[in-house]
Length: 121
Image 1 (tube, rainbow, N blue to C red):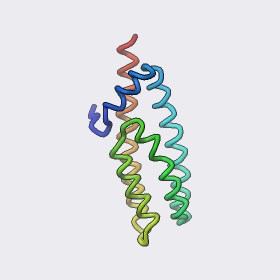
Image 2 (image 1 turned 90 degrees about the vertical axis):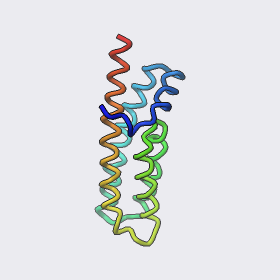
Image 3 (image 1 turned 180 degrees about the vertical axis):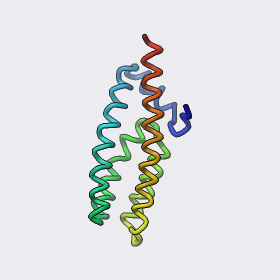
Image 4 (image 1 turned 90 degrees about the horizontal axis):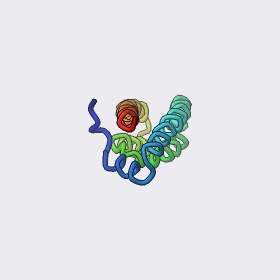
């Protein structure tokens, strides 16, 4: 499993602070919140509500960054800037890039979660 899309120092800090249970809870919340925000963002993109899309993407970034998914944070930053700028026509392409990074991050975090749980059993 390629974990390069996750800064593992963030994962280790979470485990040090709250143990594997906290990590598991945060990963579960990450998936739930991100799925919800991406659905909202998709609707905003479809409706060409670029300012609202930018706000949704901005709200997404902190939770993503807390788990060390910095490729996703970078893609979200770019999309947010595009939504605020004068060329929102790039938003769909950048949203697709963001979703690709989310898929990679979710796969890596799920692997980490399952691996940590099996180590503690």
